[in-house]
Image 1 (tube, one colour):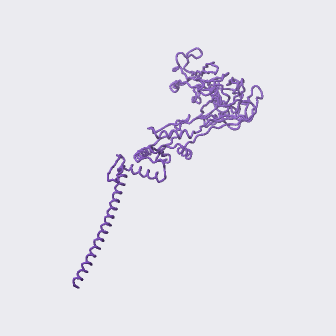
Image 2 (cartoon, one colour; image 1 turned 60 degrees about the vertical axis):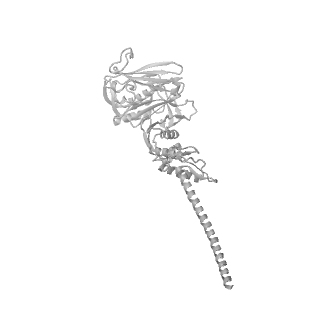
Image 3 (cartoon, rainbow, N blue to C red; image 1 turned 120 degrees about the vertical axis):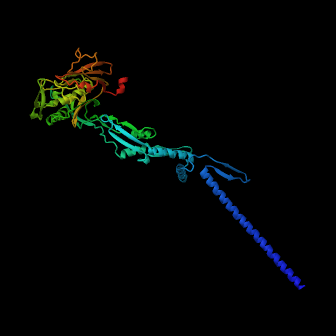
Length: 490
């Protein structure tokens, strides 16, 4: 009996142990099942993320175990452009930007920026004197800050920022042009007698110059980068200097009316000194009242002699003899004054050409010259405007300038020529006949605002004349206006 009881107890212990093992095994199975489920979810999530990043789409499982997917075709996938666009997109998101375009849109913008970085443009700045005054070679790779991104939710592009271009233009001092200079008139000294000249006391000499329009330049360059052009030309607008009247006298506007110019390169030292003396000491700051007659000889203020500071240089005597005399070269100044008178359209009272063709007067108006000799030959004109004229003159190197300032009345001067015997039209007659081989003729037409027109012939006859000149100077027509050219069409 006792043995039976012992067996029964052992069986109970065995069953209890087996029950414990079964419960423990079930817990292990449940734990293992949970671990496998979590691992499966992690693997699925990683696969879904990769699918979204590399295929531009998404993959998910619904709660009722039905699966669905959508994919997008991306031509930039796995390309360097795509990776740059992806980094750009991530940066925009990190910065909290509200305008974050898609990868495709950003990738196209990246490609366009790469093309802009390869482009180079030569910018040519032109003045009246020099069509290539300055050349500025620019590129986006040299100035990367010029490129600015413009992003929206649906658009992405890179453009050139004119403000950055303007900053570089100013900081690097690209242009070296002289700005316009204005002079200040302090007083008028009237004529002492009939054969003298009125003068103005003026601080400085007014000169034309150039002012760069930085904004226009920057905008032009920015536009060029978005075209196929690899070079552009930007003309610089010339601004005239003016005389500022600080007196109580009503002298009008004193704007630049007309200019004359000549070149005395090759002159001897003595002749060049006489030219400068005539321009800077005698013609300079002369005044012509309305209705008055200007006399060049009156500006010389006395005898042309060594005692009065004139140097000995060659002068034409007896129509063809070259001899040394005080003041040789003064005619360079009178010729320059005459050219200003012609361009202004004032009536000429007295003028004579040189008897010998002088090479100093070829440039800026061949055949338009004026000789003077005190006591026998003068250059004079009438101020037929309603306001005062102030004449300023100076030299810049071997270039002589004469500028007439006044109140422009709208007259326009058309100057056609030079005409030689071999180039003049058959209908053109000078003094009622054909032009001779030793003559040069210009035709001047002055149109006034009231509709009136006057025509003059400027003829110069020399003892001899190189026939090769006709081949050097083709006849042409230029217009000089004492008012904006737009008024000529009114």
